[in-house]
Image (tube, rainbow, N blue to C red; front, side, top):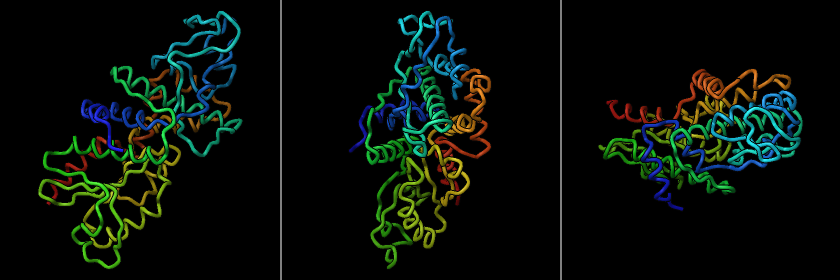
Length: 324
């Protein structure tokens, strides 16, 4: 399915804004989580959201959502400026729709695993929502996006982003037969394999090969089979990967077989890691009292892991074009 003109326009309007690009990629490939309903807390009369957070021993801080632009209402429909006026379940406006980020924790999980998953999902939702609302960016998130369609959309978004960001005359091509690459042509052991994405400069030189993987675990055998002839016959060409992996993001940074890896939202995945590692008896509200603290924690984590974003990918590709 071709990339919609509206999606292309979204990317083109925010090429120089890495956080907006992160929001566009994540938003258009949204994977709805069934646990989002647990953001609706049961409140006691005259109880604040902070007090409810402590009583429920939440792994997330309601202030993250309110700072991002969500409004909390008690069961009677009264906005929660300070305390609830009635007993019962509160709700959020707009409704909380989280992204399912951790496929290792089942929907039926209980205890600390469930607490961790919900906390991580709400943390990323708050960061995502703040990014789009502060820029007045409208992104229509899908409800149920097929897994295969998600990977194809991610690849197409990535191709368009790179095509619009790289110098005039450069090409971003995908599914090129390996036998069409100089050095791999006429090789008997290359077979009918195809590349994922190839970056070619204005002089027709192959600058890099790039793999787009929404999740890191998928198609690793195919990926390895693709890399073998490339690294054997074209060792001069770097092989990189762009991903949206969350639970295995640290492994991507440390263990990926590619030369370099890039993440669609490195700071947000850093925040997700921090919330995920929160001890069962620790308070997210005390650890990150506001969204700024959570965001900074994520940036620090990403920098420590050397997780770079798509803006760095563009810079690295441009710089490689200057190498003789």
